[in-house]
Image (tube, rainbow, N blue to C red; front, side, top):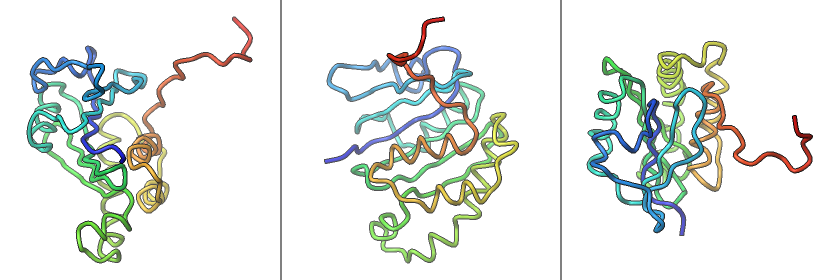
Length: 182
C-alpha cells in the first residue's frame, strides 16, 4: 500500500510545522508527520500521513496567510495520483492532477478532458512559481510534460514538478563517499 495523505510545500524561516495552522503538531516516530529535506531559501515540504489538521484548502489558505509566501498542497491517494493546489498571497489559485490516467479513472472523467486542462494548469503553476521568485526561464511545455508524465509514486512526481518549476533542489544530506574533502 502506498502513501495516502497530503504534502504541504511552503516557505518559512522557522520550521514550517511550527505554523499555527498545525496546532503544535510534531514529527513522530510513527511516521504520521515527516519533514522532507528542506530546499534552499526556507522552502520546506511536510508529509502528513492521513493527519492533516483540517480541510486541505483551508490549511493551504492558512499557510499562505501565516507565512506570507506562496504554498501548495498535494493530496495523494495510495501513491497513485495527486491533486496539487497552489495559492499565492492575494488569492491567485491553481490546481493540477499528477498521473492523469489514474486521475481520470478515479474521478470517472475522460482522460481527454483532464489532458485538455494541462496547458492552463501549467500556466497557473508557472505564474505561482514566478510569484515565489522562480521559473523565470522555464517554459510551459516543460511543465506540461511533467503534468502529462506518469511515475509509480505521485509524491515523487510532486517533487519533480517543484524541480521543473525552478525551485532549487534540496541539498544531498549525505556527502558522497568518493568526494574529496575540501
